Length: 427
RNA sequence: GGGCAGGUUCCAGAGCGGCCAAAUGGGGCGGACUGUAAAUCCGCUGACUACGUCUUCAUAGGUUCGAAUCCUAUCCUGCCCA
Image (cartoon, rainbow, N blue to C red):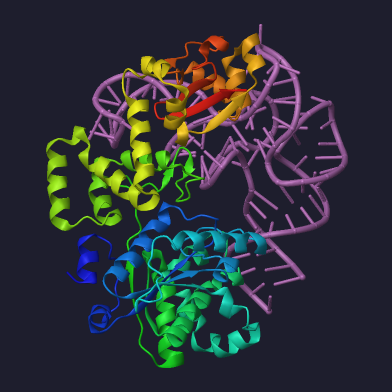
């Protein structure tokens, strides 16, 4: 299977420019994807582009990972209803550095290899280009009519919020990136999410007009859940790749909670498993969905890829402990070390031990530790039967908590809903 | 620069002097069911020292016993004209 066939089978191909497949067959091709430095860490939304680069490199081509130090200063308006907030320079630089560090783990940068991955930052070339030079040398080649016709900006042009010139410029800036990489690094292919199609095509257009060259592109569908909601969010917010932001346990849980329908497509997209094995697994899953073989395998593959074998095993251990039925007794039997081990990925909070010795009502405890943002919310959730302590449901808001609740004389395990655990440590 | 329409709680969007912490929908959270799934049903959704009090309807002033609702100025947005 060649790269394109592979990606097509995996459902990772949306649009493709004619000739792309032939180009990839013809020679080792350099290709790039851009990453937005909107945060210091990548999140699972960026996983697909990363995987595209990995597949590309596996197929013998040369991947370039571009971090958008310059484009990040402008903000991509594609399909967005509103203008984005501008990031200040310091944050931007920090973000670029953070993202760079993460990307380095997933691609092979070994310079001895002909198709070694490379990292580039578009700030490096944009910082030397003056505004006047840019509009004369580059802006001349593209008409505003062409830029406005893009679907990606339609929402803003027809919408109620307008679009600043700054944001409108974005596609030209990104287009220039492609042009620059084409001339500087013989990069002939750009990939990205399907929302990037408009920006990417502006790049190939620029290459055609300014350099009389031919460049190619393909995009990957944006990942959505079957119910149409946004992929990559949980109750806790974004799922990050950085274990300090989203613990491997939470990360594992995210994948484990995938719905049946989604799991079938995710296993193709997010793992490197091959077709026969995937087909077999899906068949098994359809026969006995309650065993959730598919979700478990998916969670395993992705967690191992991002966090490694060891973290995965911790996550499984913690999950089985927290979700087994007789956990209430089990909790009591754990040693402190085991307890902490299991709770490694669970958010932790502290209380003064003296408060517990005096006895403290649940509501205050939950709010003051920060498990709940306010007393009101803590109260309402407790009243709705949504909070458990050490795996036993808290019955009323008058419940007073004292040192008797402490596990190993030190910890209390709170639970909001079924899946959200919080460990409180008495100090 | 001129004219017009707007800026409401997470979002969309009602309200247009007291009955407004603000309809309705979406989202979110929680409960039941289940497979840590989907669908469905139910509850909650500004804060607090909580049958009451406090801070909210772009911002700052003003009118009034009383304003999200009226007036003035400012800022922001859209549309149209120049």
